[in-house]
Length: 278
Image (tube, rainbow, N blue to C red; front, side):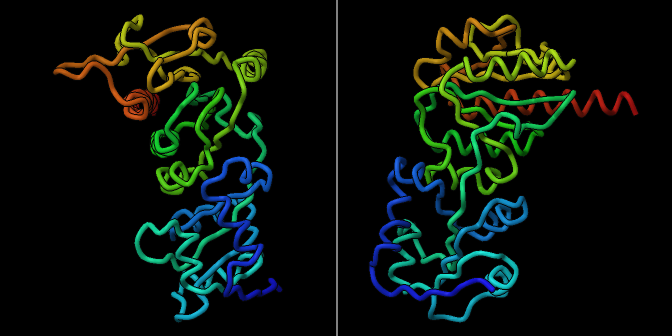
């Protein structure tokens, strides 16, 4: 049976959880982060992420969803005073009914599936956690098998990233790496196993328009930093580059919007190819 604890004061445990909201180093050391919302928590449970604690408002009656979650999830149960729970909810409006403390998986590229039809995204040195979450959401929507976040970057588990992913973080692996040197041995191994992954960079001066490139083959899409684009190291590794044709006064797209545009085109091509085969 899960243990039950009541917290009504800002004790050491509360302070520890509160620090996970804004302190990346403490999240990393603890190996855990906070999640709120019915859909994100439900998806974390559905995809078997480690739920370490379920923190809920100890005063009002709970919804049927919350009762069922507490009944079937093997995690510590924390009945918390509503003002404290509001603080863990980042004061973003109404007090959340429940906050989950979720363990982080290993940053391991072997978490990616898609053997034979791989589609993934590498985001180079992103500065906005919201963009990370948005790309994870688009990757989930358009059938990608994972996201790589490379270099000195915003945190995948920042609350803004978790929130922007709307739960897709738990369905699509997101792996943090230090450099291309971590990724290329994995790419080479999959190539050696018979999966010819091509590295395709987005660039306003790309080799071809995005709809003229064959995205039905195994692809790792490379998306650059919001300000400076792809680093020289990643650019040198591109097998191809593609551009998104644009009109109007806009000079470029937001990084998340650009990634979404290309992922949609890849998804469209793969659906069309599957229909032709059937």
